[in-house]
Amino acid sequence: MAEHRYEEKNDAEQNRFLKYTVTILSDYRLYLLLLPIIIWYGLWFYKPLAGLLIAFKNYQPNLGVWESDFVGFANFGSLVSGTWAPQFWRAFRNTFVISLYGFIFGFPIPILLAIFFSEITRNGLRGITQTFSYLPHFLSEVTITGLVLTLLYNGEVTTGVIAQFLINLGVISETTKIMQNAEYFRPVFIMTGIWKEAGYSSIVYFAAIMAISPVLYEALKVDGGNKLQEIRFVTFPGMAPTLIIMIVLRIGNMLSVGYERVILLYNANTYETADVLSTFVFRIGLEGGNQSIGAAAGMFEALIGFALVVGANFISREISDSSLW
Image 1 (cartoon, rainbow, N blue to C red):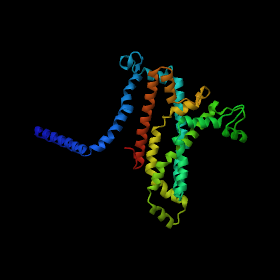
Image 2 (tube, one colour):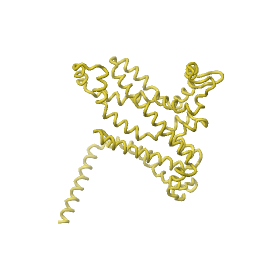
Image 3 (tube, rainbow, N blue to C red):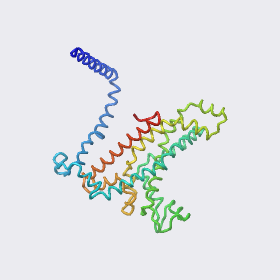
Image 4 (cartoon, one colour):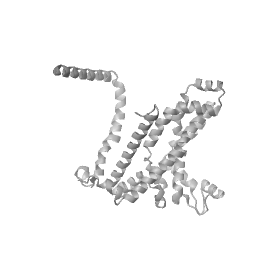
Protein backbone atom coordinates (compact mmCIF):
# COMPACT_ATOMS: atom_id res chain seq x y z
CA MET A 1 0.00 0.00 0.00
CA ALA A 2 2.81 2.37 0.90
CA GLU A 3 4.71 1.49 -2.28
CA HIS A 4 1.59 2.11 -4.38
CA ARG A 5 1.10 5.52 -2.74
CA TYR A 6 4.78 6.38 -3.32
CA GLU A 7 4.49 5.42 -6.99
CA GLU A 8 1.38 7.60 -7.42
CA LYS A 9 3.17 10.55 -5.85
CA ASN A 10 6.23 9.98 -8.03
CA ASP A 11 4.07 9.77 -11.17
CA ALA A 12 2.27 13.00 -10.22
CA GLU A 13 5.59 14.81 -9.76
CA GLN A 14 6.86 13.53 -13.10
CA ASN A 15 3.65 14.62 -14.85
CA ARG A 16 3.93 18.06 -13.26
CA PHE A 17 7.57 18.37 -14.33
CA LEU A 18 6.63 17.26 -17.87
CA LYS A 19 3.78 19.79 -17.96
CA TYR A 20 6.09 22.65 -16.91
CA THR A 21 8.71 21.55 -19.45
CA VAL A 22 6.18 21.53 -22.29
CA THR A 23 4.89 24.96 -21.24
CA ILE A 24 8.37 26.47 -21.17
CA LEU A 25 9.37 24.94 -24.50
CA SER A 26 6.18 26.10 -26.19
CA ASP A 27 6.78 29.69 -25.01
CA TYR A 28 10.59 29.63 -25.09
CA ARG A 29 10.76 32.97 -26.94
CA LEU A 30 9.12 34.75 -24.01
CA TYR A 31 11.50 33.12 -21.53
CA LEU A 32 14.48 34.12 -23.67
CA LEU A 33 13.24 37.71 -23.52
CA LEU A 34 12.93 37.37 -19.75
CA LEU A 35 16.43 35.93 -19.34
CA PRO A 36 18.36 39.28 -19.43
CA ILE A 37 16.14 40.65 -16.64
CA ILE A 38 16.73 37.53 -14.53
CA ILE A 39 20.50 37.80 -15.06
CA TRP A 40 20.42 41.53 -14.22
CA TYR A 41 18.51 40.93 -10.98
CA GLY A 42 20.80 38.06 -10.09
CA LEU A 43 23.96 40.11 -10.55
CA TRP A 44 22.78 43.36 -8.97
CA PHE A 45 20.30 42.24 -6.29
CA TYR A 46 21.01 38.66 -5.25
CA LYS A 47 24.76 38.25 -5.72
CA PRO A 48 25.56 41.26 -3.45
CA LEU A 49 23.58 39.60 -0.63
CA ALA A 50 26.72 37.59 0.13
CA GLY A 51 28.25 40.87 1.28
CA LEU A 52 25.91 40.85 4.27
CA LEU A 53 28.39 38.47 5.92
CA ILE A 54 30.57 41.53 6.50
CA ALA A 55 28.06 42.68 9.13
CA PHE A 56 28.99 39.65 11.25
CA LYS A 57 32.75 39.90 10.79
CA ASN A 58 35.65 42.17 11.63
CA TYR A 59 36.19 42.78 7.96
CA GLN A 60 39.73 43.37 6.75
CA PRO A 61 40.08 44.17 3.03
CA ASN A 62 43.44 42.41 2.80
CA LEU A 63 41.93 39.18 4.21
CA GLY A 64 38.65 39.24 2.31
CA VAL A 65 35.16 38.31 3.50
CA TRP A 66 35.79 34.64 4.22
CA GLU A 67 39.14 35.00 6.00
CA SER A 68 38.13 37.92 8.25
CA ASP A 69 37.40 37.12 11.90
CA PHE A 70 33.80 36.23 12.77
CA VAL A 71 32.47 38.48 15.58
CA GLY A 72 28.77 37.54 15.61
CA PHE A 73 26.45 40.38 16.60
CA ALA A 74 29.23 42.59 18.01
CA ASN A 75 28.86 45.13 15.20
CA PHE A 76 25.12 45.44 15.86
CA GLY A 77 25.81 45.90 19.57
CA SER A 78 28.27 48.67 18.76
CA LEU A 79 25.58 50.39 16.72
CA VAL A 80 22.76 50.05 19.21
CA SER A 81 24.54 50.72 22.50
CA GLY A 82 28.24 51.04 21.81
CA THR A 83 30.69 53.45 20.25
CA TRP A 84 28.60 54.30 17.22
CA ALA A 85 25.26 54.51 19.06
CA PRO A 86 24.96 58.36 19.22
CA GLN A 87 25.54 58.81 15.50
CA PHE A 88 23.47 55.77 14.56
CA TRP A 89 20.39 56.74 16.57
CA ARG A 90 20.64 60.32 15.31
CA ALA A 91 20.65 59.00 11.74
CA PHE A 92 17.79 56.62 12.56
CA ARG A 93 15.70 59.45 14.05
CA ASN A 94 16.38 61.76 11.13
CA THR A 95 15.51 59.04 8.62
CA PHE A 96 12.21 58.29 10.31
CA VAL A 97 11.27 61.96 10.76
CA ILE A 98 12.10 62.90 7.15
CA SER A 99 10.20 59.87 5.82
CA LEU A 100 7.21 60.59 8.06
CA TYR A 101 7.03 64.24 7.01
CA GLY A 102 7.50 63.19 3.40
CA PHE A 103 4.62 60.75 3.72
CA ILE A 104 2.29 63.24 5.41
CA PHE A 105 2.98 66.17 3.07
CA GLY A 106 4.17 64.38 -0.07
CA PHE A 107 1.87 61.40 -0.44
CA PRO A 108 -1.39 63.37 -1.08
CA ILE A 109 0.14 65.66 -3.73
CA PRO A 110 0.31 63.08 -6.58
CA ILE A 111 -3.27 62.04 -5.79
CA LEU A 112 -4.50 65.62 -6.04
CA LEU A 113 -2.52 66.11 -9.25
CA ALA A 114 -4.08 62.97 -10.75
CA ILE A 115 -7.57 64.23 -9.88
CA PHE A 116 -6.69 67.63 -11.36
CA PHE A 117 -5.46 66.02 -14.60
CA SER A 118 -8.58 63.87 -14.86
CA GLU A 119 -10.77 66.98 -14.69
CA ILE A 120 -9.03 68.63 -17.67
CA THR A 121 -11.22 67.86 -20.66
CA ARG A 122 -8.89 69.15 -23.38
CA ASN A 123 -6.37 66.47 -24.23
CA GLY A 124 -3.82 68.97 -25.54
CA LEU A 125 -3.89 71.08 -22.38
CA ARG A 126 -3.80 67.95 -20.22
CA GLY A 127 -0.76 66.65 -22.10
CA ILE A 128 1.12 69.92 -21.67
CA THR A 129 0.42 70.17 -17.93
CA GLN A 130 1.34 66.52 -17.37
CA THR A 131 4.56 66.90 -19.32
CA PHE A 132 5.64 69.89 -17.25
CA SER A 133 4.83 68.06 -14.02
CA TYR A 134 6.79 64.96 -15.14
CA LEU A 135 9.84 66.90 -16.31
CA PRO A 136 11.66 67.29 -12.93
CA HIS A 137 11.67 63.50 -12.49
CA PHE A 138 13.93 63.11 -15.51
CA LEU A 139 16.47 65.64 -14.28
CA SER A 140 19.44 64.27 -12.38
CA GLU A 141 19.81 64.80 -8.64
CA VAL A 142 22.85 66.97 -9.32
CA THR A 143 20.79 69.27 -11.55
CA ILE A 144 17.88 69.44 -9.10
CA THR A 145 20.06 70.15 -6.06
CA GLY A 146 22.07 72.68 -8.06
CA LEU A 147 18.87 74.58 -8.86
CA VAL A 148 17.74 74.41 -5.23
CA LEU A 149 21.07 75.68 -3.92
CA THR A 150 21.04 78.50 -6.47
CA LEU A 151 17.49 79.55 -5.63
CA LEU A 152 18.13 79.43 -1.88
CA TYR A 153 21.61 80.96 -1.92
CA ASN A 154 21.93 84.00 0.32
CA GLY A 155 25.29 85.58 -0.33
CA GLU A 156 26.86 88.95 0.20
CA VAL A 157 26.71 89.94 -3.49
CA THR A 158 23.89 87.90 -5.03
CA THR A 159 20.88 86.19 -3.51
CA GLY A 160 18.67 83.44 -4.92
CA VAL A 161 15.12 84.27 -6.00
CA ILE A 162 13.43 82.21 -3.29
CA ALA A 163 15.83 83.43 -0.59
CA GLN A 164 15.16 87.05 -1.60
CA PHE A 165 11.40 86.38 -1.58
CA LEU A 166 11.59 84.96 1.95
CA ILE A 167 13.64 87.95 3.07
CA ASN A 168 11.04 90.34 1.64
CA LEU A 169 8.31 88.49 3.50
CA GLY A 170 10.27 88.70 6.73
CA VAL A 171 10.48 84.91 7.10
CA ILE A 172 14.28 84.99 7.28
CA SER A 173 16.79 87.75 7.89
CA GLU A 174 19.34 88.95 5.36
CA THR A 175 22.11 87.17 7.26
CA THR A 176 20.37 83.79 7.35
CA LYS A 177 22.14 81.08 5.38
CA ILE A 178 19.32 78.65 4.65
CA MET A 179 21.45 75.71 3.59
CA GLN A 180 23.84 76.27 6.48
CA ASN A 181 21.03 76.12 9.02
CA ALA A 182 20.00 72.69 10.36
CA GLU A 183 16.39 73.68 11.04
CA TYR A 184 15.72 74.44 7.36
CA PHE A 185 17.17 71.24 5.91
CA ARG A 186 14.13 68.99 6.36
CA PRO A 187 11.59 71.40 4.78
CA VAL A 188 13.95 72.05 1.86
CA PHE A 189 14.60 68.32 1.36
CA ILE A 190 10.91 67.37 1.50
CA MET A 191 9.75 70.17 -0.82
CA THR A 192 12.51 69.31 -3.28
CA GLY A 193 11.34 65.70 -3.29
CA ILE A 194 7.73 66.73 -3.86
CA TRP A 195 8.71 69.02 -6.72
CA LYS A 196 10.82 66.33 -8.36
CA GLU A 197 8.57 63.27 -7.99
CA ALA A 198 4.95 64.40 -7.49
CA GLY A 199 4.12 64.69 -11.18
CA TYR A 200 5.68 61.38 -12.16
CA SER A 201 4.11 59.61 -9.17
CA SER A 202 0.68 60.83 -10.25
CA ILE A 203 0.76 58.52 -13.30
CA VAL A 204 -0.35 55.44 -11.37
CA TYR A 205 -3.23 57.31 -9.71
CA PHE A 206 -4.27 58.91 -13.00
CA ALA A 207 -4.39 55.43 -14.57
CA ALA A 208 -6.56 54.22 -11.68
CA ILE A 209 -8.97 57.12 -12.20
CA MET A 210 -9.16 56.50 -15.94
CA ALA A 211 -10.10 52.87 -15.23
CA ILE A 212 -13.24 53.92 -13.31
CA SER A 213 -16.39 53.38 -15.35
CA PRO A 214 -17.95 56.67 -16.62
CA VAL A 215 -21.34 55.13 -15.89
CA LEU A 216 -20.74 55.66 -12.16
CA TYR A 217 -20.15 59.39 -12.67
CA GLU A 218 -23.26 59.66 -14.86
CA ALA A 219 -25.38 57.86 -12.27
CA LEU A 220 -24.19 60.25 -9.56
CA LYS A 221 -25.02 63.26 -11.76
CA VAL A 222 -28.51 61.88 -12.34
CA ASP A 223 -28.91 61.68 -8.56
CA GLY A 224 -27.94 65.35 -8.26
CA GLY A 225 -24.33 64.90 -7.12
CA ASN A 226 -21.84 67.73 -7.50
CA LYS A 227 -18.14 67.59 -8.37
CA LEU A 228 -16.93 67.14 -4.79
CA GLN A 229 -19.41 64.32 -4.27
CA GLU A 230 -18.12 62.67 -7.46
CA ILE A 231 -14.60 62.72 -6.05
CA ARG A 232 -15.72 61.51 -2.63
CA PHE A 233 -18.15 58.75 -3.62
CA VAL A 234 -16.77 57.59 -7.00
CA THR A 235 -13.16 58.63 -7.53
CA PHE A 236 -11.71 57.75 -4.12
CA PRO A 237 -13.53 54.39 -3.80
CA GLY A 238 -12.43 53.52 -7.34
CA MET A 239 -8.83 54.37 -6.46
CA ALA A 240 -8.93 52.52 -3.12
CA PRO A 241 -7.05 49.32 -4.18
CA THR A 242 -4.28 51.38 -5.79
CA LEU A 243 -4.07 53.72 -2.80
CA ILE A 244 -3.75 50.82 -0.36
CA ILE A 245 -0.99 49.13 -2.36
CA MET A 246 0.94 52.40 -2.67
CA ILE A 247 0.57 53.09 1.06
CA VAL A 248 1.93 49.62 1.89
CA LEU A 249 4.91 50.19 -0.40
CA ARG A 250 5.50 53.67 1.02
CA ILE A 251 5.45 52.36 4.59
CA GLY A 252 7.98 49.70 3.60
CA ASN A 253 10.30 52.49 2.40
CA MET A 254 9.98 54.57 5.55
CA LEU A 255 13.67 54.03 6.36
CA SER A 256 14.87 54.32 2.78
CA VAL A 257 15.88 57.93 2.24
CA GLY A 258 18.07 58.24 -0.85
CA TYR A 259 21.58 59.33 0.02
CA GLU A 260 22.28 61.16 -3.25
CA ARG A 261 20.13 64.22 -2.57
CA VAL A 262 21.11 64.31 1.10
CA ILE A 263 24.83 64.23 0.32
CA LEU A 264 24.44 66.97 -2.28
CA LEU A 265 22.47 69.21 0.09
CA TYR A 266 23.90 68.64 3.54
CA ASN A 267 27.10 69.84 5.18
CA ALA A 268 28.77 69.69 8.59
CA ASN A 269 26.44 72.40 9.95
CA THR A 270 23.30 70.41 9.14
CA TYR A 271 24.35 66.91 10.29
CA GLU A 272 22.06 67.19 13.29
CA THR A 273 18.91 67.03 11.14
CA ALA A 274 20.28 65.86 7.78
CA ASP A 275 22.34 62.76 8.53
CA VAL A 276 20.23 59.68 7.67
CA LEU A 277 20.95 55.95 7.68
CA SER A 278 22.05 55.83 4.05
CA THR A 279 24.53 58.71 4.50
CA PHE A 280 25.68 57.19 7.80
CA VAL A 281 26.48 53.95 5.94
CA PHE A 282 28.22 55.94 3.20
CA ARG A 283 30.35 57.99 5.60
CA ILE A 284 31.27 55.17 7.98
CA GLY A 285 31.45 52.27 5.56
CA LEU A 286 33.00 53.84 2.47
CA GLU A 287 34.64 57.11 3.48
CA GLY A 288 35.64 55.91 6.96
CA GLY A 289 36.73 52.46 5.84
CA ASN A 290 34.70 50.66 8.54
CA GLN A 291 32.79 48.32 6.23
CA SER A 292 31.61 46.05 9.03
CA ILE A 293 29.72 48.80 10.85
CA GLY A 294 28.36 50.16 7.57
CA ALA A 295 27.11 46.71 6.53
CA ALA A 296 25.50 46.19 9.94
CA ALA A 297 23.69 49.54 9.68
CA GLY A 298 22.52 48.75 6.15
CA MET A 299 21.27 45.32 7.21
CA PHE A 300 19.47 46.84 10.20
CA GLU A 301 17.73 49.29 7.86
CA ALA A 302 16.71 46.50 5.47
CA LEU A 303 15.30 44.31 8.25
CA ILE A 304 13.22 47.15 9.69
CA GLY A 305 11.92 47.96 6.19
CA PHE A 306 11.00 44.31 5.63
CA ALA A 307 9.14 44.21 8.96
CA LEU A 308 7.25 47.39 8.06
CA VAL A 309 6.16 45.95 4.69
CA VAL A 310 4.96 42.69 6.28
CA GLY A 311 3.12 44.55 9.05
CA ALA A 312 1.48 47.05 6.71
CA ASN A 313 0.45 44.28 4.32
CA PHE A 314 -1.04 42.26 7.20
CA ILE A 315 -3.07 45.25 8.43
CA SER A 316 -4.22 46.01 4.87
CA ARG A 317 -5.32 42.41 4.36
CA GLU A 318 -7.25 42.45 7.64
CA ILE A 319 -9.14 45.69 7.07
CA SER A 320 -9.64 45.57 3.28
CA ASP A 321 -9.62 43.27 0.28
CA SER A 322 -6.39 44.70 -1.13
CA SER A 323 -2.83 43.62 -0.26
CA LEU A 324 0.49 42.84 -1.89
CA TRP A 325 0.14 39.15 -1.11
